[in-house]
Image (tube, rainbow, N blue to C red; front, side, top):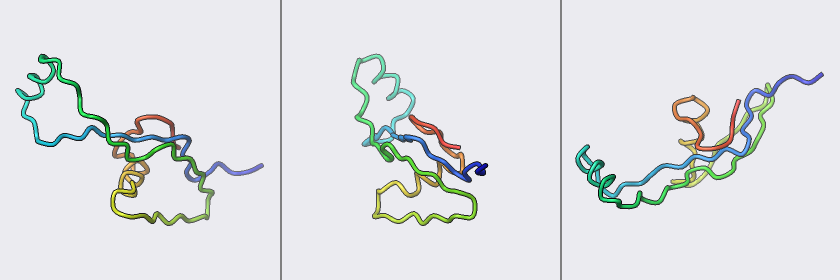
Length: 87
């Protein structure tokens, strides 16, 4: 019988909405009532799937903007995934 994985990501996606400027509440309300479209989402993680067994280690390597900090924020349960699941 095998032990449960230490960490498992199953088709995890994480996206954020980019804003070119910081909006005050009145800016958000104005955009909502004027019918302006929301900005396109920025996809930080796209369909990430991996399994880490107990006693295994993992190195997260990538260039700026590759999603390293987003991945670690998900592991630390600081942000929820947009889609998929992890345990």
